[in-house]
Length: 180
Image (cartoon, rainbow, N blue to C red):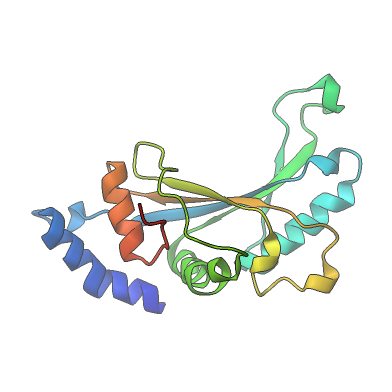
């Protein structure tokens, strides 16, 4: 059990229960999963690019990524249905909390000119998605061994019913949102 996980179960959950006024401890929103996704458009011409992106995602998360394939053909991009086009990882449980702790405390502060993550990227059901433009903010990536700087999308899926509840949960977990 990670430090963040202990903090959630011992402090954050009870604090959210009191502040929002939930009657049951099971009504309190919690983090369900974290999904990381890298789209590799260059994989159409060079399949090695997808392998390197997959290896980097595996180093960041500690879990082997699933290769995602194109759903339909697009002739302008020379893309055929079924061609490998990206990779993704779904984190749950201990790995999820450990990744979120590293993301908040180590990786996000390494972003250049960082002033906070915008709080407008909620989907209406309490889930939050944001993009990172450089994978080198993670200390697991060796700068000399990367072939290209890539971005990724990170989705934090919660059990919160509304965006407000999701925002309160993520702020309590330590996400550095911009001040309005």
